[in-house]
Image 1 (cartoon, rainbow, N blue to C red):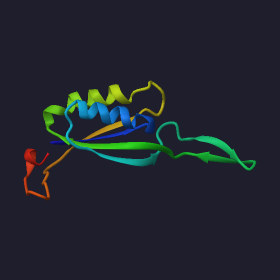
Image 2 (tube, rainbow, N blue to C red; image 1 turned 180 degrees about the horizontal axis):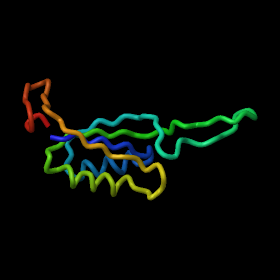
Image 3 (spheres, helix red, strand yellow; image 1 turned 90 degrees about the horizontal axis):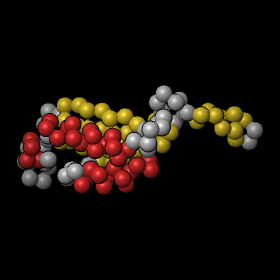
Image 4 (cartoon, rainbow, N blue to C red; image 1 turned 90 degrees about the vertical axis):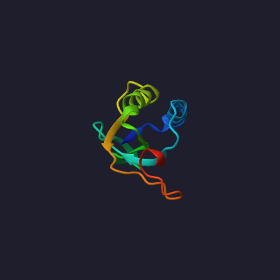
Length: 112
Protein backbone atom coordinates (compact mmCIF):
# COMPACT_ATOMS: atom_id res chain seq x y z
CA UNK A 1 0.00 0.00 0.00
CA UNK A 2 1.04 3.58 -0.63
CA UNK A 3 -0.07 6.96 0.67
CA UNK A 4 -0.35 9.57 -2.06
CA UNK A 5 -0.23 13.15 -0.81
CA UNK A 6 -0.96 15.91 -3.30
CA UNK A 7 -0.52 19.59 -2.47
CA UNK A 8 -2.49 21.62 -5.04
CA UNK A 9 -4.02 25.02 -5.73
CA UNK A 10 -7.23 25.75 -3.75
CA UNK A 11 -9.25 26.22 -6.94
CA UNK A 12 -8.45 22.61 -7.88
CA UNK A 13 -10.27 21.19 -4.82
CA UNK A 14 -13.55 20.32 -6.55
CA UNK A 15 -12.13 19.20 -9.93
CA UNK A 16 -9.56 16.94 -8.26
CA UNK A 17 -12.05 15.53 -5.75
CA UNK A 18 -14.47 14.70 -8.57
CA UNK A 19 -11.69 13.15 -10.70
CA UNK A 20 -10.53 10.94 -7.81
CA UNK A 21 -14.05 9.70 -7.06
CA UNK A 22 -14.58 9.03 -10.78
CA UNK A 23 -11.32 7.02 -10.77
CA UNK A 24 -12.69 4.77 -8.03
CA UNK A 25 -11.09 6.26 -4.92
CA UNK A 26 -13.37 5.38 -1.99
CA UNK A 27 -12.11 7.91 0.51
CA UNK A 28 -9.65 10.74 1.03
CA UNK A 29 -8.55 13.27 3.58
CA UNK A 30 -8.52 16.91 2.48
CA UNK A 31 -6.90 19.73 4.47
CA UNK A 32 -6.40 23.42 3.88
CA UNK A 33 -2.71 24.17 4.36
CA UNK A 34 -0.22 26.99 3.84
CA UNK A 35 3.20 26.66 2.27
CA UNK A 36 5.72 27.90 -0.23
CA UNK A 37 7.88 26.37 -2.89
CA UNK A 38 10.34 27.75 -5.38
CA UNK A 39 8.40 30.98 -5.78
CA UNK A 40 9.05 31.96 -2.11
CA UNK A 41 6.04 34.24 -2.07
CA UNK A 42 5.71 37.83 -3.27
CA UNK A 43 5.89 41.39 -1.99
CA UNK A 44 2.87 43.52 -1.20
CA UNK A 45 2.47 46.86 0.49
CA UNK A 46 0.36 47.29 3.61
CA UNK A 47 -0.06 50.87 4.89
CA UNK A 48 3.04 51.94 3.01
CA UNK A 49 5.23 49.16 4.38
CA UNK A 50 6.61 46.38 2.20
CA UNK A 51 5.48 42.95 3.42
CA UNK A 52 6.82 39.63 2.10
CA UNK A 53 4.01 37.10 1.80
CA UNK A 54 5.74 33.75 1.57
CA UNK A 55 3.01 31.38 2.70
CA UNK A 56 0.52 30.54 -0.03
CA UNK A 57 -2.83 28.80 0.63
CA UNK A 58 -2.96 25.27 -0.75
CA UNK A 59 -5.13 22.15 -0.44
CA UNK A 60 -3.65 18.82 0.65
CA UNK A 61 -5.23 15.55 -0.52
CA UNK A 62 -4.19 12.29 1.15
CA UNK A 63 -5.27 8.87 -0.11
CA UNK A 64 -4.06 5.35 0.66
CA UNK A 65 -4.26 2.88 -2.21
CA UNK A 66 -3.01 -0.49 -3.43
CA UNK A 67 0.42 -0.40 -5.06
CA UNK A 68 -1.11 -1.25 -8.45
CA UNK A 69 -3.32 1.87 -8.42
CA UNK A 70 -0.53 4.40 -7.76
CA UNK A 71 0.53 5.18 -11.33
CA UNK A 72 -2.99 5.64 -12.67
CA UNK A 73 -4.03 7.84 -9.74
CA UNK A 74 -0.92 9.99 -10.05
CA UNK A 75 -1.88 10.55 -13.69
CA UNK A 76 -5.42 11.51 -12.63
CA UNK A 77 -4.05 13.99 -10.07
CA UNK A 78 -1.65 15.53 -12.58
CA UNK A 79 -4.35 15.93 -15.22
CA UNK A 80 -6.88 17.47 -12.81
CA UNK A 81 -4.47 19.76 -10.95
CA UNK A 82 -2.13 21.02 -13.67
CA UNK A 83 -2.41 24.60 -14.93
CA UNK A 84 1.11 24.81 -16.32
CA UNK A 85 1.94 27.74 -14.05
CA UNK A 86 4.37 27.99 -11.13
CA UNK A 87 2.65 26.83 -7.96
CA UNK A 88 0.67 23.88 -9.33
CA UNK A 89 1.90 21.78 -6.39
CA UNK A 90 3.62 18.50 -5.65
CA UNK A 91 2.77 14.81 -5.26
CA UNK A 92 4.46 12.68 -2.61
CA UNK A 93 4.25 8.87 -2.51
CA UNK A 94 5.27 6.93 0.60
CA UNK A 95 4.85 3.30 1.71
CA UNK A 96 2.16 2.41 4.25
CA UNK A 97 2.90 -0.56 6.47
CA UNK A 98 -0.62 -1.26 7.71
CA UNK A 99 -4.18 0.06 7.69
CA UNK A 100 -6.75 -0.90 10.31
CA UNK A 101 -10.43 0.05 10.20
CA UNK A 102 -11.33 1.05 13.74
CA UNK A 103 -15.03 0.11 13.53
CA UNK A 104 -14.59 -3.50 12.32
CA UNK A 105 -10.95 -4.32 13.05
CA UNK A 106 -10.36 -5.16 9.38
CA UNK A 107 -6.73 -4.78 8.36
CA UNK A 108 -4.76 -4.42 5.14
CA UNK A 109 -6.53 -4.12 1.80
CA UNK A 110 -9.92 -4.91 3.36
CA UNK A 111 -9.61 -1.80 5.52
CA UNK A 112 -9.22 0.47 2.52
